[in-house]
Image (cartoon, rainbow, N blue to C red):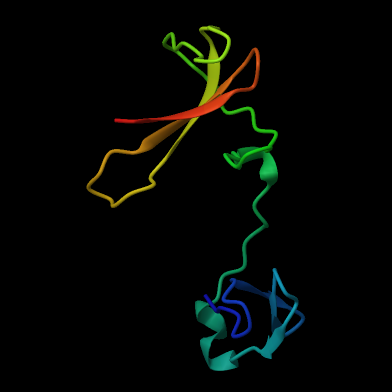
Length: 107
């Protein structure tokens, strides 16, 4: 795997050179290491869940009842992210299916 010197993003092989997926910078491909490089298809946005304010995400529907503090609705979308150290429990992010209110729950 080769990373961009300009922005640090992962580069991919294109026509004998390495090209940055983010900023477009290019670098010569080291042929001695060419056997170690593996190019993969780009990740689709289908499995990316946005948790930023204003993001249009539809995570997984809750399997247990939760209560929205804004409207009292009992079903929400949720996603889980590791926001602290690896030995700490993950954080659950919720978005009310009715009013869109967002909140988080720490375990």
